Image 1: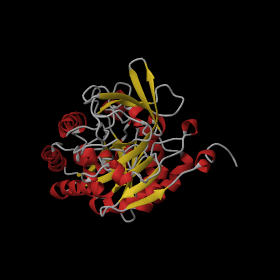
Image 2 (image 1 turned 135 degrees about the horizontal axis):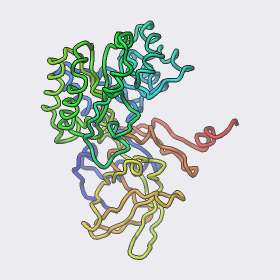
Image 3 (image 1 turned 120 degrees about the vertical axis):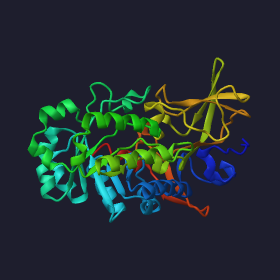
Image 4 (image 1 turned 120 degrees about the horizontal axis):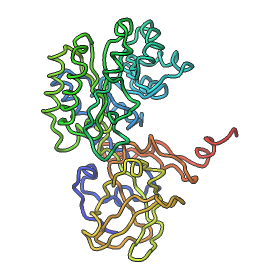
Length: 403
């Protein structure tokens, strides 16, 4: 199927070339990481850090393809981890940089090892701070507590809202007043909040207002304040000047070092998932293209979020002449990526290219139904393609048994 040029940000790295021309020789499904796009994102983030004095970390939960860490490392202060394995990866793959870690609850048998890798350790509750904080302090680590400002700024994505009623994430002011003794407060170097998801700086402003109302009396006694992630800084149209006012305002008002830890912003629009049509079936008026890529296995956020990923040369259903539902090959009835329209009907063997596939894909994919994991390639800035990793039956089997 011939595809017209697609100038959307998700496909800017193609340079006007067709997906078939660029990636037609690759085995599908496969991920392609775009080095030039990562470099562009890093440059934007470095500019924010330079102008404001904040420090920006890579949240590895969104992007943990460590072969590309050297591209981002010159632009970042370090990495953020959600536990022992990510902390170790950050320390090993970005040597000499800061390693921050936050976990809802730490495990006794892992904490000593965690102290080898982490520089900043953030606790979720006063109880965890009381249990592990003294040990972290004795090891020379910077100790923080996650706070919950109780100000929701998003609708429709409750699963990603840490400020939803009954949230398990962060310490509310009521909990602080009830549980935080002077001895525990003395352990703290900083506070951390994370309330955003793919949002602009106006949501950060609202959050900071709630932080000041609930914890403004405490912040002048802290050395640092971590704004968490969810800042879509590298998205076209993001209000960077407003973000910078938020950062500078916090530094001036409370005298703290400000940290940001975006994941998506580091690797936004910096990768693709190439796949091919295996079959086309019809059910009533619905035409369904069965792909060799699965939403459930290879792009799980499509179902979990949920969202409709960008697709090269395709439009909203009904906008172009031929509308198809795109689904995976698994037995899950809901393994559906979405409905798209095309200028020509899809046929078996057609190459499709999904955009913005560097984030929450390689780090979240799975082998449900025995689906093979896609190979991972990197598209270098000079146009070279390099295979970073292939997977096979052994990668499926080794997770499930002893032999």
